[in-house]
Amino acid sequence: MPELFGHTRARVAARHALITPDNHVNSTVPGITGATVVILINEALGAKFAQTLVTFRRGGSASFGQTEVQTFGYVLRGGVTVRLGGKRRRCGAEGFFYVPAGQVCELGAPKAGTQVMLFRKKYVALAGAPAPRAIIGDAANIKGTPFLGDPAASLQVLLPDEPAFDLAVNVFAYQPGGHLPFVEVHVMEHGLVMLAGEGVYRLEDSWYPVRAGDAIWMAPYCAQWFVAMGRQPARYLYYKDVNR
Ligand code: UGY
Ligand code: MN
Image (tube, rainbow, N blue to C red; front, side, top):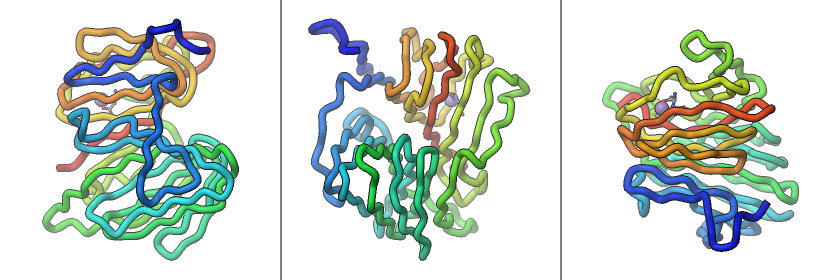
């Protein structure tokens, strides 16, 4: 539903931001063709990573890699063929891939309207830890676990929790009324997209009604809390820097 003429739910503050689907403006990004690309979060906001929404047309393609930047991609809807690490796999909705820095990944043969959310960050190596491996997976095969014992807040961890990885990407699912158990304040940064449902996100000293399609940036130490509302479960996908 379009928002009221001349109004927006978007807010860009010094240490957090909310971008709604009504705010999207496309960018041309080298390496991505036959697609609209919206850079939701990047260094221009003050973030240390980029979160980008790619919506493919039929025949579109993308290639990433062979740089110091690693890429995590999550298929929001549709389907696309992923070539990575010597493998070629079709990823449908909830499929994901992880491209380590220095490796190449090609996306092709998308169904028209396929949407992929990308999180990209410069890799920080750790002395003594091996380089992370390429991964193609499916969130549908990853079990959620109750967050801090609460069955109304279930967490799926998509990447291995190993020192080689300096980022995590997780899916949080909340039953209506489910909430983060306390207001988090932490050194890790987040990029987030609401996948389903609605709720209220507290960011620093502001409370925002949010729903599917909304993207949020939280700088390190941004106070954060979420409560799911409405009749459907709420789910969000989020990025976090870890292990360094
Ligand atoms: O992993 C996290 O820090 C998570 N609990 N944060 C959040 O959902 N805002
Ligand atoms: Mn957090």
